[in-house]
Length: 102
Image 1 (tube, one colour):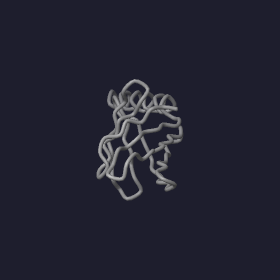
Image 2 (cartoon, helix red, strand yellow):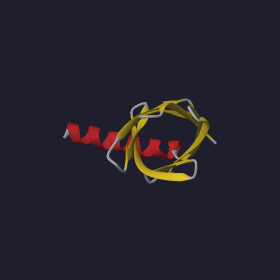
Image 3 (spheres, rainbow, N blue to C red):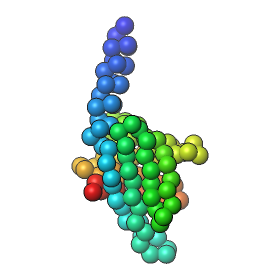
Image 4 (tube, one colour):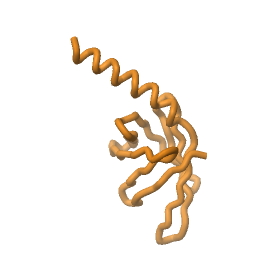
């Protein structure tokens, strides 16, 4: 019974934190071709999308202690960390991106 109470508490806390993170975020990536702007949108229903140079990439996301977890359509999982009002993601093949809320 205690495990069930803790599970319910954890789920409630996760749901309440999701609405605190939803919104639009922007990051700049400095790659070999120069600066690239990336926009990340987190919806309160757990869906999200990245917009990079006109390409839209959907994903789902969930709250974790101290951060969030991004689940891409191809099955990859990216751990994100909350730093103040920003989200830091280490994106494979791209590197570290710091998304700031706009």
